[in-house]
Amino acid sequence: MVRRRNEIGIRVALGATRGRIVRMILGETAVLVGVGVAVGLGLAVFAARAAASLLFGLEPWDPVTLAGAVGTLALAALLAVLGPARRAATLQPVRALREE
Image 1 (tube, helix red, strand yellow):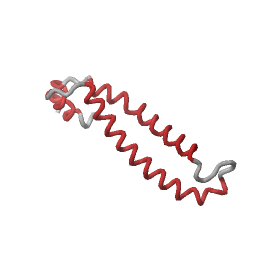
Image 2 (tube, helix red, strand yellow):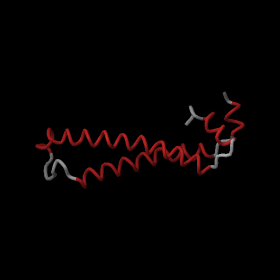
Image 3 (cartoon, rainbow, N blue to C red):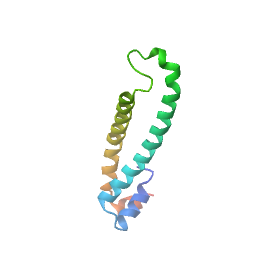
Image 4 (cartoon, rainbow, N blue to C red):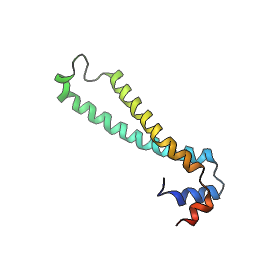
């Protein structure tokens, strides 16, 4: 978020609320996680054939395992971005614009 400090400062100066800033950052993260999940699931399905002999007690297309992995990834991404998003929401526009 440090690289986008000026942009966020301008948004706050123009009237963006803290909730709007947090939603913007979380939305951008959700798009990145969604793309990563789509690519990862595609690769997992492709790689499942090669790893089928190594999966003891699991089917290569086990939906519970795949859903657990996706849920864990989404939770980790949310926890990783929540702190920076909250800090960005409390940004003072004058300080952000003066730093450049």
